[in-house]
Structures are given as C-alpha cells and as structure tokens.
Length: 481
Image (cartoon, rainbow, N blue to C red):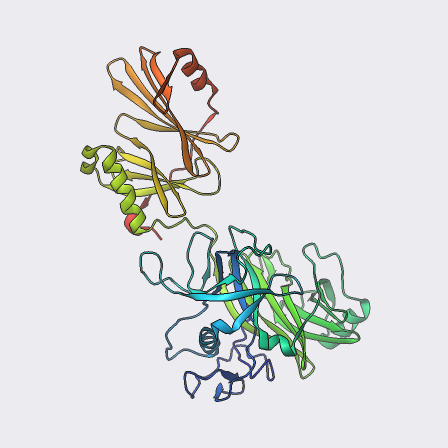
C-alpha cells in the first residue's frame, strides 16, 4: 500500500507526495497548531485552518476519531503523530460531520477514550466491531434524536470538519459509484494517459463525481516488463490529473496491489468533497480486506497529490471482550445458584449466540469440561441462564421466530431424568420449562414454576426446533482479548 506521510500549512497549501520519505520531527512548541511540508517538518507559531479528519461511525453512542499512531512522542514520531496531536488539541473545534450528504450534521466533542472498562490501555491503530472499544476522540450528535443516526455492527468512515474550514471550503454534491463501476473514462482521457506513460490501458473505472466539474476514478494498464501500474485519476473538464501506483508481480498469482484484489486495482471511495480557494479537497477511503486507508486528494502544481492520514488494520473476526467486573458478576451468580459451585473454578470461555440476535451469550466452564454456566451478556447486564454439571449437559437448538432454545438435561438419579429448556429473546431469558421424567414418562413439568399437564409437557418437548452442534472453541479466560 502506498504511503504518503505529509502535513500541510493551512489547508493543503503545500500538499506533496512524500512516498517513502518520512518527515522529520517538529522543532517548535508542542502547543502549536500549524504544520507545513518541506524537506523537513516545520512547526509555525500562528494557528491556521484545521484539516478535515475521519470519524468512525457505529451508532449515535459510538462515533469516534480513532487514533492511528502512538499517543506519546518517540524518536520515530513524524508527521502522522503531529497531525494526531494537533487533532487532539483541537478536538472541540470539530463540530461538522458529513455522512454522505452535502449538508453537515452538528456534533459535539464528548471526550477522549484511551482505556477500556477495566482501566487498561486500549491498543491503537485498528478498527473494531461496535462491542470492542477503540482509543480515540468521542463525539455525539448535538441533537440526541438526530434522524441521521443509524446503527452499524461494523462501522463506516465519515468526515469531520470545523466551522472555520467550511467558511472557505464549499461542500460539493457527491455522486458515488460502486462495483462493478459500469462507467469508464472518455476515450480522450485514456489516449492522453497512454501517451504519457507509454502503455496500453487494460481497464478504467469512474468511481465518483463531485459537483459539476470533477470526476474521480482509476486507470489500470496492461502488464509491461512484469511491472503492474495503475493510476489514480481526477478529471476537471479537459484537464486530467493523475498519480501512478505501482503494483507487485508474482509469476504464479500475477499482478496485485492489495491482498485478494484478483489482479485488479480497486478505486477508493470519496466520502466528502469540498471546493476551496486552491482547488478541490477530496476526502477518500481506500478499503482492502485487511486495512482501511484514509486521507485527502488535492491538485498541487498540476499534479494529483495524495495526503495519507492513516492506514488502519481491520479487525474482522474478533469476539466481544468480557470485562473483569462482568466476569466477577458471572462467577458470583454461579455460586449464588448453588454454594457448592464455589468448588469449581470456571477458567475458560466460549461465546455463542443462542437466540441469534447478533449478541453472543457467554458459556463458562472449568478446565475438566464438567461444570459450567451460561449467561446473557448485553449492555453491561449479566444474567444467569442455567448451570451444567457432570450429569446435566447442554443441547442447542435452531432459533425460531426470534427465540433461541437451550436445554440442560441429564440423569437425576436412578430412573429419573431431569430437563430444563431455557427460551431466550433479545439476549434475555424469557421463559423456562422444567420437566422430571421417571422411566421415560413425565412425572411433573411446568413453565416458570407453574405446573402444566404431562400431555402439554410432552407436546412442548416434541415442538422444539431441530438441534444443532455448535463449533466449540474455548479460550482461556486469562488469554482473552
């Protein structure tokens, strides 16, 4: 992935591609807010217009500028750290959130989050699911019931600006396209680029149009001398601006720019576009299976410049953490259910979505796989579902009509057999069926302590959905993420 770690004075006065050339550390005071690019990074004393930043949005209660580099300055800290520090210092000035529309939504800065609910430092540089906290700057809608707010389990990147930035930069109407990118660049554009690079175009894609002037997309050339080459392209009327992006070639797999790209260079997404005094400012996202890159595109000295802010790692397969305070609640509920349970140390965990509502329940067990317990775990609320022992073991069922079913059953001594069926909905236990059978016949049964007939109990057991066998992957509680 290409990298351009540069910073700008004001709003992209001197944005320049700085590929493979890290900026030197600033030499000025740490409370200054103006940055410029040259052979070295210079920190000036006067304040200037703050650049747009990128906000990772899950829902109205989880919207955050996620940190992309270390919080403490080190010998290796460069422009990326300077930009992040500048954003932290001025977090309260960022009040305009662009969510794919021309009109901004008003937001307010809530505070900085750098520790998890257990008080431990949160690792930096990744994009997580909603249930895993990230380190960053938290924001909220100025109006709590803003209808622009929606919920996403896995977030989406948005653009955040200051009011001062919008005084000199007008938001442009954005038309964004997606795969399979049916529109191509005009033949005249392709001919110009073929002449410029001495190559033949293999494919081109128009990915976005901004206002009435600008068109963004990519051009990919046919392979030449085993060197893949693609272009980021911005067209303004009869003017064509581009920036080359070299790929990698493998004798077996062919050309590639990102993991699993299938030999095709994929365009970025334009999240917001502004028309400023020095030309367009395009806020882009370049997605790949393992990473998300964000930054700015501008026109500088008749060339397309890319100012890369950050490249985040995408956490795809991650389980929800169980915080120490909630784990303590679970263990207390387990012992409260039967004081003899204090003899068993529940040391490993498996999370499983019994009611398939998108929120996992928690299954704790001891190291011998004999004793354990199931819990609902949602929004910090912990409730005991049921307990397994050496005799009583779980059976899982397919969910039905929004309900999940868990049975814990086994020998009750002699010819007796005991069954409990727990019904779950929206991560809550809503009903419990209890049944005692002797020599295979129901002796007594009922729902939530209310007795029903043996025939009714038999019909209920026969009406349960099909069973299922979940994949069991246990984690040591001490090693959980």
